[in-house]
Image (cartoon, rainbow, N blue to C red; front, side):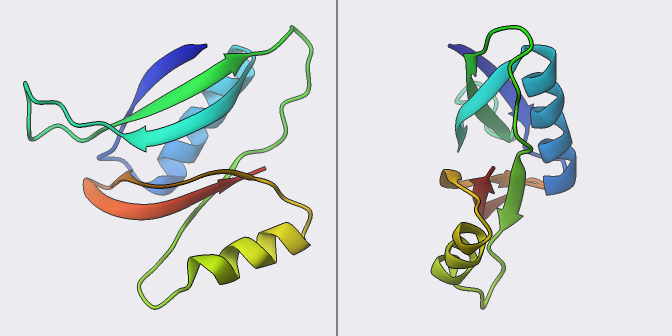
Length: 107
């Protein structure tokens, strides 16, 4: 397994692009995505991505990150994505644009 810090001050789209780049470069498959406190620097907003190494040439399905916005129900988002044939990769509170955000990852 490989672990990488991801800048939680960036937008969700930027984080999704960074995760996708890392998956393709590895090749890796994202296993977990969580926010990570940095006691040495409380102003830092790092997220932590843990990947499983894949064999060269292995297909890496597209990763989709969806933020659960105020007034939305995570269960509804999950049901819609499952009905579309997607699988849940993670459902966590992570840093997005420097703030806590409930995010669900699918592929």
